[in-house]
Image (cartoon, rainbow, N blue to C red):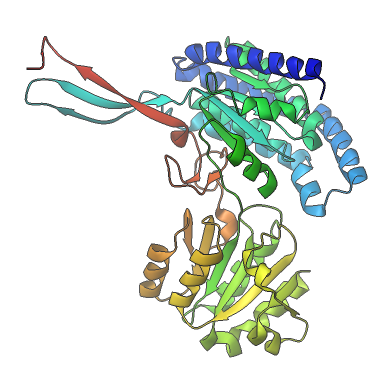
Length: 424
């Protein structure tokens, strides 16, 4: 990059940051009704501009196919009428949520007469960096807005046209409701140097949310001078216990793996209790292969079905994001928990069992953001949790964990009311 180009990137990012900081002072005190008006206007604009959004997406899809993007990445990139409607419905669902800003979390009086409240407040300015999912533009913008936060969005080059078509709807909705367009901004260049500059802007950006592949998140974790909400992988497990309902297990496994293979909540490894190998494992393998899934397994799994490919040690720590799954036979719930805590990514892990004692052992001991009993791992989603949508899933343990919705995008401050008290 030339010195002039670097200077231009810095100027663009500095202006975005300054505009965002100024807008945050306005948005942080905007009434709920005004924020909801933006969301409802945006939902209507997404629907009425569906043809324009799909035309922009067609450009991105054609470019993606030419670049040789995988089927999983192309699926993440694709927008059709159903997905546009889902974005619009997500906006409306977020509008229905309670506004977290100003909520009194707790309050108490001190013996000296001081009245103290802990009150929810916005984080401020959120930078969201994502790759090939254009729907993140709508979800991230809406959640940030509802929680009183200004958003600076940096979508991937693969979704450039799609994201900008969605961004146009958000900008128009902000204007219609009388809020600055700078409450939600999108970085206007695909130059990666803009991300590098963004990660240094601690004076104007309060938190970074990366959504993308392991390489992107590792780079952001290494280079960011700003706190992060992040997860590196979605290595999600299903453990089939000896007390499982076989029919229930088969249904959940196929859904957890194959509903959408490219999402971070897709099941990547299945652990099967040795006591049900004879009664359950052959059917599980058949179901997966019939659904078009490649099965890799340990020696005991291969012995059940010759079509199973030998698993390598790397398979236990791989997020496939594809129609591939690994299967391992374990002795009991203790070994399953040990495997998950060793090889998992602390994202989403499931147990299938009718034994509630074993279930509680699993739910208590698995060190993951989301622990599931008798349901698909693909419920790892803010919308499915009743949050309207999510800005991402955090596998860290500071501030927010699991789906990051409007409440998780707030911090708090203390309001202390006195009547002349002075400290002795």
